[in-house]
Length: 60
Image 1 (cartoon, rainbow, N blue to C red):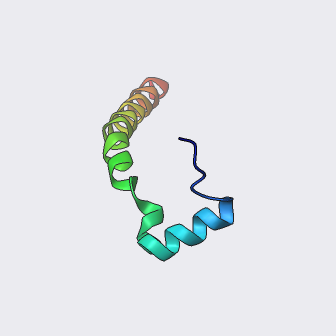
Image 2 (cartoon, rainbow, N blue to C red; image 1 turned 135 degrees about the vertical axis):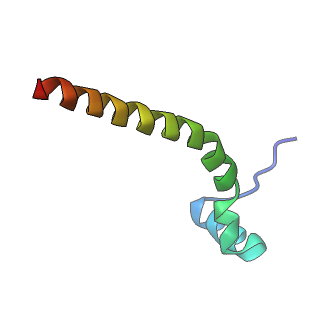
């Protein structure tokens, strides 16, 4: 069964807005943020520690 749900981008946008409201465009953002958070925290910590050690080494 192959049926077309939307006729185009504007149709998709307007139907989503009409049926789900403005928050329909943000579905899944919380899950994606929670998924990304550990990576971002680890990256920040590694960056800061590396920067700290490089600054210490360059002062000697």
